[in-house]
Image 1 (spheres, one colour):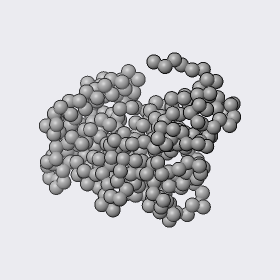
Image 2 (cartoon, one colour):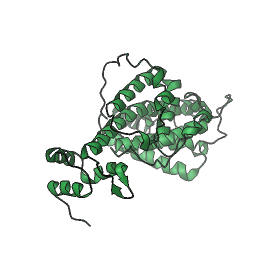
Image 3 (cartoon, helix red, strand yellow):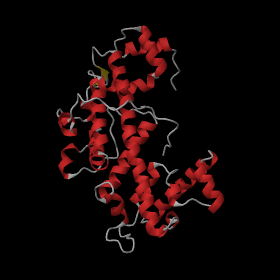
Image 4 (cartoon, helix red, strand yellow):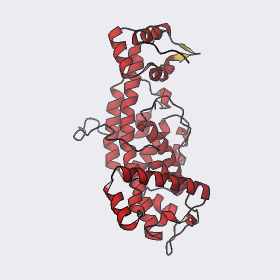
Length: 316
């Protein structure tokens, strides 16, 4: 493997790559805060045929790094609502229809191998919560020996909930109900089950990128969200479909909050004028597409909220 390099030699190496180093002190602060290998992912935006374009400055690369950091926090905040609502609806519909121990009934699920894998994840998550001394977990385990579904979902990761929901039998119906269980859960989001299954899978991937503090900017996303007919033109493996997906969810579940978050997004993007949105698949009229142009941008934002990922998020 390559030997490690002291910071000063890393700065020299950046210059050898063709990156303009304006201030040695600034470069040192950057490399002490984000290592060379991490920054490598950000200057790929400035490469052409494997070579850094002439005139590329470290300040421009750092601006993308900081923009990406703030954008991930924005995404994390929005996905948090979706995750909690998905947990809630999954537990509510399934437990009312099949009891508090619905998770222990493999006949409710289509793929037994996938079900077994999901339940192994549930077991690990419950054990982890038990070791952390989570009160509702310890109470239910001490009293009943296991968790009812509505308690279990509170320790389940978004990925586990998404996998279990996607694996519900397509013909699974609660007695006396017209819709399938999957459709009843999706109805709370104002869409059909195929859309919600796809959106939860996609947002789980994005959530984990954010939780791991990985690069989201200029990234090919392997798990694409299913696009509605009116949004087909925005389909692709770049990042813009993520914003369309969140828009469709929020306009049904939290329309007022979506307007607030759009203003926050517009403010964030405006704070980094040198950062291009094209590598993320944003069209030129992205403000119109997301509805920002129709907002009263001059209206003040609500009282500032914390923008940090508090505590240690569960990663799946």
